[in-house]
Image (cartoon, rainbow, N blue to C red; front, side, top):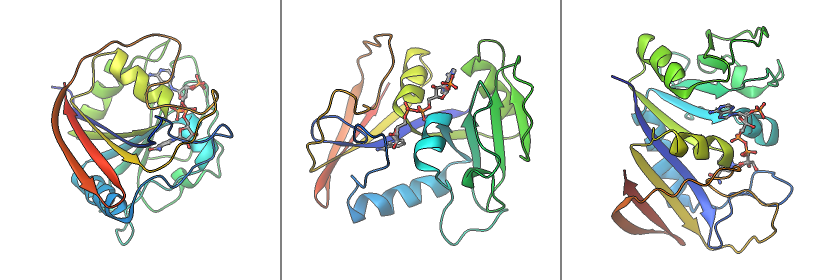
Amino acid sequence: MRPFVHVNCAMSADGKIAGPDRKQMRISSEEDIARVRDLRREHDSILVGVGTVISDNPHLTVKGLGYDDNPVRVVIDPHGRTPDDALVLDERAPTVMVTSSSCDREWDAEEIVRAGDPLDLNVMLEALDEIGIDSVLVEGGGETIARFFKAGLVDKYTVFVGPWVIGGKASPTPADGDDPIMKKMTLESAEILGNGVLLTFTL
Ligand SMILES: NC(=O)c1ccc[n+]([C@@H]2O[C@H](COP(=O)([O-])OP(=O)(O)OC[C@H]3O[C@@H](n4cnc5c(N)ncnc54)[C@H](OP(=O)(O)O)[C@@H]3O)[C@@H](O)[C@H]2O)c1
């Protein structure tokens, strides 16, 4: 059995997850930030793509939790672009780096998974399952989320829609990438969370 995959992100009212400079923007309300904190605690792992590591340099940890209690951080980085001093590699939580089999890059991480060439999400999820990870919270960015949808590997999708119009053709969206996805989901709920709305879908 593969781990449960929950995709969560925040987007503007015009469907963008950041501005054209791709720098992190605060789209979430206070209430949504608290929800995401709880969501992180509920999952065994938090996953992002290398694009997010390079743009935002996130910690991907829960404030107040130590190394043993934080979820495992997972970075998909097929070409080994994650810098050694990225915050996601610090000592606050264990980190699994996922790269392609042809990439021989090493990191000071808990585990390095070489998941095929080209990188195969099913191989990655199998490897995560083997190290005891039952659930993955995919937080972005757009290209990574698109690939999970495309591979049919999303079980639940939550998106907070905040009160921004960002615009800009170059601004990333929750499901970026060249390939169309065309997947219909089931809306489970719509809930006002401060100045925005949380939409919950299952697949
Ligand atoms: N609002 C939000 O909730 C939120 C959350 C997170 C991020 N963001 C924003 O999202 C933007 C970054 O998104 P992004 O799309 O540029 O980057 P990304 O999705 O974080 O990373 C994309 C890169 O990861 C690798 N990758 C991911 N999945 C892969 C797969 N299945 N197979 C092969 N390679 C895979 C590829 O690396 P290679 O190119 O090396 O092949 C790909 O180009 C930033 O602007 C950030 O601020 C917003």
